[in-house]
Amino acid sequence: MDIDLRTSALYKEKYEKIKYLKVAIIGVGGVGSIIPLSLVRSGVKDLILIDKDRVDVTNINRQEAYNLEDINKIKVDVLKEKLLKLNFNLNITTKYERIDENFDFSILNERDYILDCIDDIKAKILLIKYALNNNKKIIVSLGMGKKYFPELIEITSLNKTYNDPLAKKLRYELKKEGIDIKKVKVCFSKEKINENFEKDIIASSFFVPNTAGILMASYVINDYLNIKGEDN
Image (tube, rainbow, N blue to C red; front, side):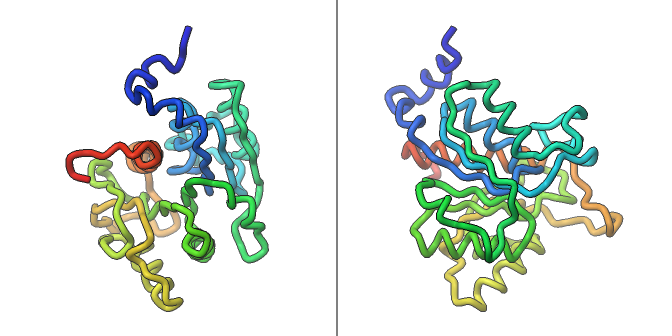
């Protein structure tokens, strides 16, 4: 049985190119955990997964890659094991690390795309600066918590974002460093946050973060293969 039959039928002669695509996913939680699952099912074979977290029971409601048997296990290790069950012929590098000033960014030098799915604003800035300084394509995921409507998610440039406190803070910090925010590609939700939530819990369901992750994965494939829609 050819597991790639229907995917290759969609992308036709361009499909063979997908196996050369190299992607780094930084943060494999609510948004990031579904991205490698989507990419591998689409024919991608070379991934770097970076995250410093272990699976927690509060992840199960929305993080597609994990189940109750995975609690307390290192996320990147769990995800790698599950990806290899989809395709034995994968090149997966995992890093159980945080992104900070001591991180060795050279591991990203051969990547075609960097997908930032972490919450740490300082880490996001470091990734953005690395990407822009090294001519790397990056998509930054913004706030997906406290939101109900996945249909309001889109990929655009940071200067066009609104209704997102994380985006506002990121814009401010990048402008202070003289970085052109028009050059920063982001995945964000246009939905206005309802503030009537408990302050110590980031309320979230399955739908919004996973839609964001799938949208980012789809964007990477279509951009890499130069597939343009009517509105592009």
